[in-house]
Image 1: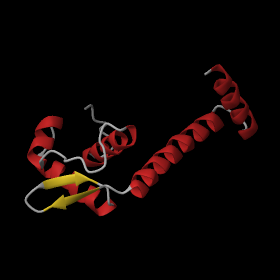
Image 2 (image 1 turned 90 degrees about the vertical axis):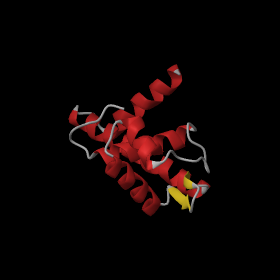
Image 3 (image 1 turned 90 degrees about the horizontal axis):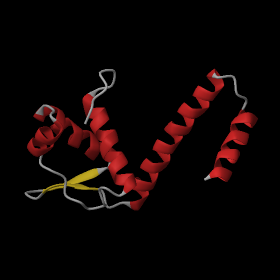
Length: 119
């Protein structure tokens, strides 16, 4: 995983895991690697890996089973919320970028509809 120096590593890892959940690379109820294994796998500090799991648990993205490890949430509602939140971020970035290029909202919609026809 390549990291952006402008964003805290733990947030980048959480976003990658969110993306993996949405795309089906990780499924509800899947067991996550131990913090030590996650740190080794991603080349990050074990304390950062621990923070990833703590933050994810606080967000409801994962849960711990005593003695068994950390697991991806089994809540379809949380997965749906993650997907919608990430979509809103992408759309927001798109709209801001298009505004900077001088496009109106109507022009943006027209371009999207034209692109849809080509797909």
